[in-house]
Length: 60
Image 1 (spheres, helix red, strand yellow):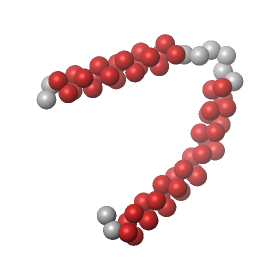
Image 2 (cartoon, rainbow, N blue to C red):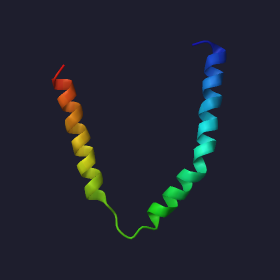
Image 3 (cartoon, helix red, strand yellow):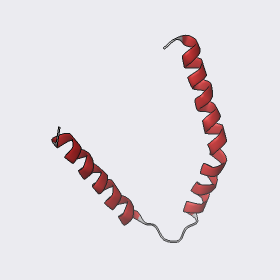
Image 4 (tube, rainbow, N blue to C red):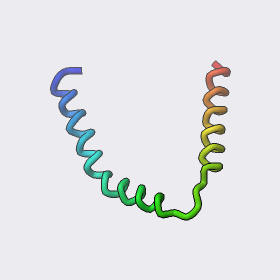
C-alpha cells in the first residue's frame, strides 16, 4: 500500500471508532448493571464456533 492509502485507512479507522464509541460505552454500562450473567451461553457459542472452525479445517 502506498502512503496515502495507509493514511486514508487510518483516518477512516479513527472515524469509525469515534462514531461507534458512544453506543459501545452505553452497551458496556448496561451490561455491567445487568443482574444475571450469561457465561454459559458465551461458553456454548465459543465451543460451537471452535467446533465449526475445526470442521472447516479438517474438510480441506
